[in-house]
Image (tube, rainbow, N blue to C red; front, side, top):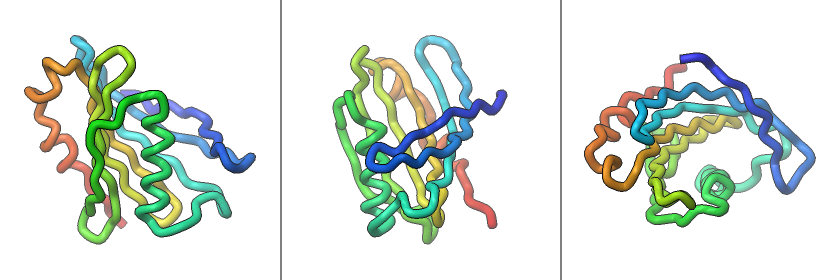
Length: 130
């Protein structure tokens, strides 16, 4: 898959960042995506979980939050959440914060397909290597 870039503007500042994203669309409304961006200096304030909660809130704006919980990948703080989109499809995400970098993994599908997908293998395949 190709890497796409998108500009991300932060609502409570004039700062922006470049988000790098790659995704695979398997048809039947099934999509897997991985993305990341670096917070510019002076944009991300608070504890890691507060920063992650704000990133989640931005991501779920206009959608229905179904579930949300703090998680960890080793010592790396994260959040796992699930939303229902306006078209009825479902999106599950895992986000992690390493310093100023936010990693985001997403699985999207129809409600009929989401539970049959091997989301655990996809999410568990993500590793942070220094």
